[in-house]
Amino acid sequence: MSLSGSSKRYFLVTASAVILAFTGCSGEKKAQEAAPAPQEQSQAMPEGHQPMDKTQEDISKVQHANIKTQKTVSLSDEVKAKWKEVKLELVDNASGAKETVTIKVGGDVKLKEGVKLKVDALVPDYAIAENTIESRSNEARNPAVLLELVEGDKTIAKGWVFRDFPEFNSYNDGKFTVKLLVPAPAQAKK
Image 1 (cartoon, rainbow, N blue to C red):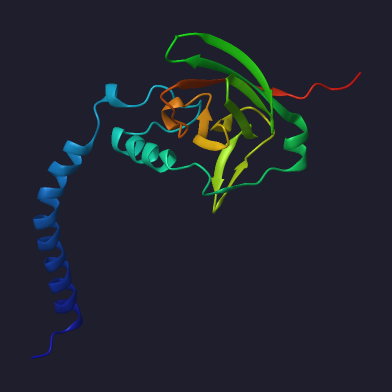
Image 2 (cartoon, rainbow, N blue to C red):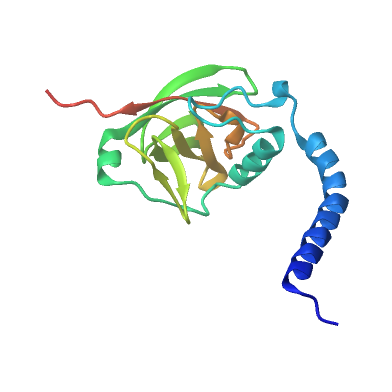
């Protein structure tokens, strides 16, 4: 049996409609269940950024949580010249003591005997491109700092701390909490 051209089209349209009807019914309910309520959307997105639903935000957090040292930090000479130090708030969780410190990129600060916090990198406008971490611009639009907590000569914690999105921080240590206050651009010489 051979179908004419119009019969084939009619058959394909009908078959497509039947498939859509079967798959569409269950998919509509899932889409409604997955849609976040307006209050669930993130309130801390940068200006102009599309709001993320809760599922997208959770996926993004998981992706960022593993960002420690697996990606190479690649910064232009211009960025390195402008962003040479960072201001951090350090909290000793045991005593509750708070301290604000300014540390040069590549430098460190002593937290207590035998324990120091090193600043490995400062990225003013953090972005991931392929297998590298780079800065989209030379402005502090999404600043992040790569920190390493060292006790003796052993690394205890290493990871990123974000100024505007602390929920993405991969630096995690129970003894010392670190908050990025401001990256400090280099001052022009007079």
